[in-house]
Length: 364
Ligand SMILES: Nc1ncnc2c1ncn2[C@@H]1O[C@H](COP(=O)(O)OP(=O)(O)OP(=O)(O)O)[C@@H](O)[C@H]1O
Ligand SMILES: [Mg+2]
Image 1 (tube, rainbow, N blue to C red):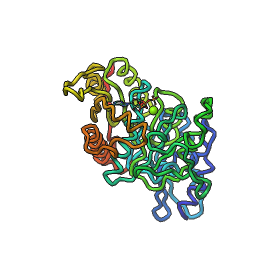
Image 2: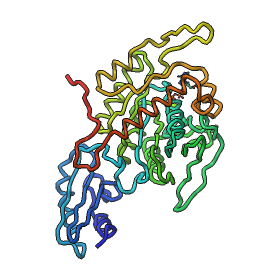
Image 3: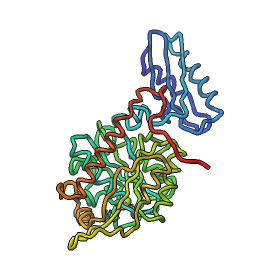
Image 4: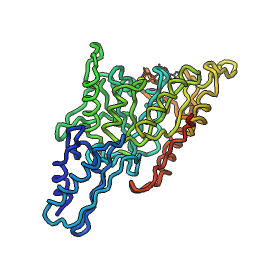
């Protein structure tokens, strides 16, 4: 009796609502074989549905039918989030240790700039980093990494090979579509494209896979959280209330889908005049700190307004590579370190243990 045989048997179990087998759905988190005894851990994403019981029973029956099996235990987890390794679903992103979504409520607050620089900063510190540009509507990452016009190679098993730049393995819809002709993306198309990116890209082994999201709480966010087990989300906001209000909605959304928010980054925090050195808080101040206090999540850092960020973004070299000694780069390196520490300090080793980043949002 082998793990493969058990998996094969589990492929016959269909989720009654999703109408797909539980292996393809990524529900099988772990299979343990001890002599003739088999334990299967199922990780079924919330919400908890009545059909779970049926699912469990069906699994037990199928595993029992495998020759050589005498005892079966099915453990069902519905509320767990982010165990370590954080993407335990067997077939999706299995070589990735931490999958981090970089999100915001409002558009244009600097998510892509943050994702690009954080990815490059993590890679600089010796980690294996991938960056998936999930913004099918307006991919910015090819430009920010100097990869415009490049086309990825097709690898083994019809997978797409990411393109490496500045130490980061990059994949983007921008590599696959001509950016002169706008594509009208609809919900199901977005869903399909994101799923392809998660399942058919040859990422290899990665410490961090950073996901650059489009703004808001739309189809992309939904597909991502349904398809892969995200280790955490980083929320980017600017300091003013109009951005904070939307960031709060983003935070809530991740709470609902049980993705832990690792922290908030305040972008465009202040502006230091290059001539007189005076610091101006152009977009107000303290907004992100207040949001963090409310939600009980850490403020990972504040990035000032820096014209060099625009220049380096447009030129295809993240500031942490182009100007490593600049104050902004140092801030990015610190944030990357804080993110890494946050993730590594989570010592949950099995899904039985309690969740490591918990929500402490005040509720009325
Ligand atoms: N701290 C900063 N200082 C100055 N300019 C910045 C800063 N952060 C981002 N920018 C600039 O702001 C613009 C928008 O940034 P970016 O594309 O990263 O935002 P976004 O949140 O990803 O946008 P979208 O919602 O459209 O995906 C870019 O021109 C970028 O160079
Ligand atoms: Mg963007």
